[in-house]
Length: 217
Image 1: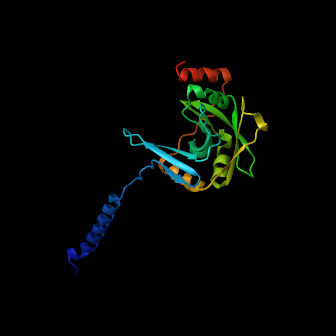
Image 2: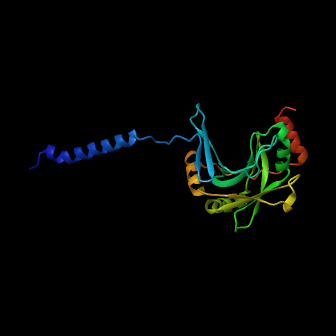
Image 3: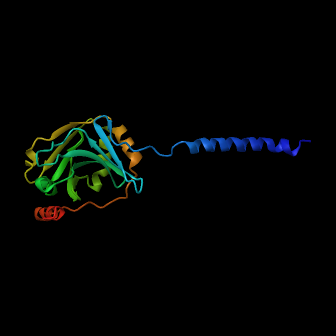
């Protein structure tokens, strides 16, 4: 007849193994530090961490400009952002100043056209958020934009509206590499956001009023 010790021995060994495994898992870091700056193919991922909340804010943008910055005009960049849980392309102009208000007026009174050949183009309305102008896909185009972006080799970008040259202006061609890897890396530090309604357009007068309020003039 087996003693109670022999009966319990296998269970004790199993419990010990589980404790060792749990300890090893606990010793491993649960999160990866967000990169201050990291190049992934044609993209750059730059992150900052809020020391109060430990939350990361990351910007994933194409290294080549859609329109290079001028002396008083911020550049137009192609970024990837989370919009309603989808990672979509967004044309942005960041850190606007009063001297660069013309760029803001152009974007706010027009749209950005984006195409991933051979697919058809679509238009992205623009809006002002703080000192950043962003032209993003409408909700109806978001699924398509996310899907086409991941496998695209090139992107064509053209601004339309006041002073942009209209639809006859030649679009800028941008080469894309490493996009799938960049998307995966960005998602590590950017949780999906809730769905949002499309931002309504505003008139040129309203745009200038907003810019004056933004810069205190």
